[in-house]
Length: 283
Image 1 (spheres, rainbow, N blue to C red):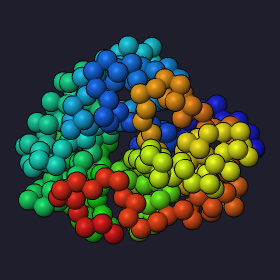
Image 2 (image 1 turned 120 degrees about the vertical axis):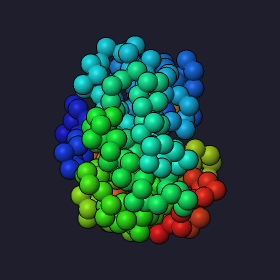
Image 3 (image 1 turned 90 degrees about the vertical axis):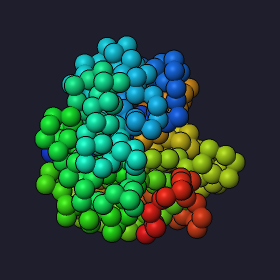
């Protein structure tokens, strides 16, 4: 066991300082979402992740205001849906998100998914314009492959700071993580705990054994695995107050090199969870 860490570390990328553990809000809605966001902030989270497609930005905004945490201490992320990433549409979507959230800007605005019908150059141009207009402090992409990320970086006239992708021990993401790191961007991992069913990462014997050795839960071990990888931000979600708090209690222990390797060795084919129609051809 290692020294305790009282505050969440950050991942720095092109001027953005992103708390390494964020609170995900999909698919939380209504009062459940509002209470969950407030609870997350109360227990120490300072990074909240939402999206226009989630349909919960208003609830997230209410949760922010219900907490006693000053707005300037919260790193707030939202995303523009793939149908609205054309020039003009993206900026209007961002403005609508700000209105729903009740904030003058977000800390990070992402293109949620690429869209084959809209060029990367056009969508990135619009995203950069949104930043220059002050709608977001920082900008980035989500669900971009190595090829799409290279296109986005080539088209960007403002720094991109993040690529948010699905990442957990069952899903090996070496290629996109390497490309994202090489460009100096953070990798934000959604579904960081993998599937919640009996066939998921949490059911792996290696995870259970490591958790027992540290007196931690399997979820805490998996989040610690993310945390100890350079440039990785993990975004777990939960609607249960006890679980929300538990997921943030990952700064008072450290996995050994052997434990990190054992978890990384759990990758297996066919483990992608999020695969909507129109998804890009993955690396």
